Length: 208
Image (cartoon, rainbow, N blue to C red; front, side, top):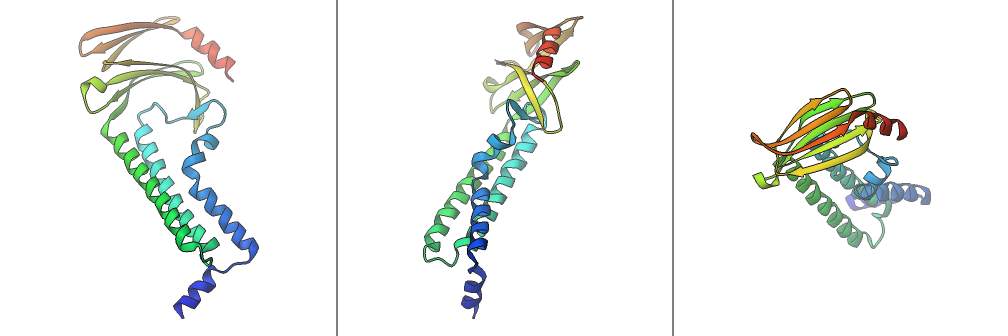
């Protein structure tokens, strides 16, 4: 009786089978096309290179796993009554397991290291974040200077990014049209840079 009920549950009209197959393929392939489709043009997600990146990326990785598992269930709805289903099921669960391993690895990597904004400068249409990224040792610490503009709730454009390894602090001095940045390792000066604020403004206007 249970076997007959299971068979009835997986038998569908051609239209229903096509619908479930399409939904299953979309769900199972989410980890492959998510970044390509979700990020329009030259934009990147607004949480990239911010203090929220580790949390949001971890949530996204777990959501990918949940969607893929749902895709396996949709695939069963589409082809569960076919003789090939046992073999298809093995392949689908192997793919779900791989996505799960990747999700766990992503969550672990995002939480092992430290990712925080040391300082930030905001002007007319642009923002400069100095993001400290620390790995498992002092040799892996680095600071990224990320200049972005055209901010929305989900997206922003990256105008410029500079990365310096072996530093753990910054000191900023903002003038009328310049931003002087001193990169530090403890109390020692490692490197000094100067940026034009008017150039940031012009480049932001040009990128709109």
